[in-house]
Amino acid sequence: MDKPQKTSARKTRKLSSDEIAERLLLAIMEHRLPPGTQLVEARLADIFKVSRTKIREAIGRLVHDCIATNIPNRGAFVSSPTVAQAREVFAARRLIEPALVQLATRGATADQLSALREHLMKEEAAQLAGDVRQIVSLSGEFHFLLADMAGNSFLSRTLRELETLSALIIILFGTPNHQVCPGDHPALVDAIELRDEARAAELMVHHLNHVERSVQLEVPEKPSATLEEIFS
Image 1 (cartoon, rainbow, N blue to C red):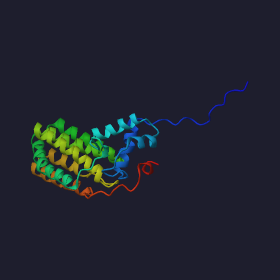
Image 2: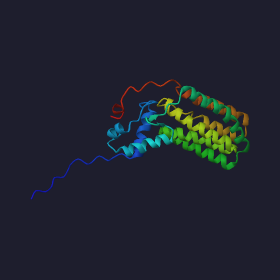
Image 3: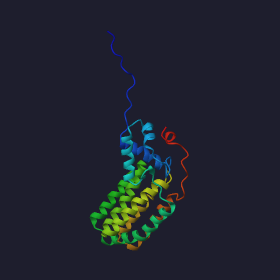
Image 4: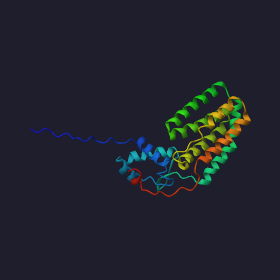
């Protein structure tokens, strides 16, 4: 009796919803999926050879992180804050964060300073690894640490909302190889450690101006390729 033939080709491993979300996010960060692009479930399911359920989960993760937006009766789209809204976010941060960092400088404890130094090491590691998503995330966490140190819960909540919007703006408008001011945070921590409130506030304004200049705040171009071409 003939033995059943063995298939030589192994089955291709299916991507998880998290992996698909990462692929979509990378395409957004590299500007292959511009703001306003519709994330069509059926087409993405065909592209990644997975169920629409997995695609829906992946898109849901992006929506949770404000990277994508669900529009009723239309579907999910890559989020598209306007240039005017982006500038308003940075203007609001320039009003709030110099005061926050002064409060943080005034009351900084040894443990808090140690936590800031440890955080700077994580940022440096992310820079060396070229992990753009981690760089953006850690940059936001640095500002959260300062806000918590300031001890004003209302301002801290406000800053968290603004920082989330800033991260989205950096992802959508930043150039693929741009840096989020890697040299600014250490100088800020130095000023805090020296209890120099005026210097810390001055550095914060400089830092926010630097971040705003590092992104290309202009109306994005319409997608020039289809979803199939982007992920081929």
